[in-house]
Image: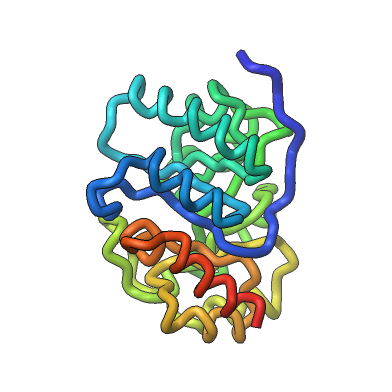
Length: 214
């Protein structure tokens, strides 16, 4: 097992996720290189349809790339991959292993993020010791199958006003609705197809960053 990493905190800014089927024929590595070069502080590897060995080899490269860029590297679902490549954290959903078991398996130094879709789920994640939560899907999304109905801005408003845990807003967020998410109080915002599905990733990220700074 690789040496444990020191736990980091969730920074503000863009939280980018890989999605090769939406990347216009480009590889995860090619897209990630452009994302990191544009100064995005968080990259999550989300992959559902590749063999474990292929994912491991990709994550090794991405771990090196994120180290060099000073970015946080999160792996979706796969605890084994997160440990094997010394990722900074792992992100789990409501149907994955319980948070307490995930913590037992990955140890104290990895960030654990938990997707939540309601106040009750958010409260449970806080109680169980999540390092951050995903809040969404805010809007309808096409980049994830078996996703629940959009929760809208009401749930985001609840988290902002009632919880102190770091969180990332996610789900259907695009340039045209990003300002509303920022106005609602989100400081870390996940985008998938809006970034990886754009022919000019650096230019798109610049436009998104201008909205975040405003």
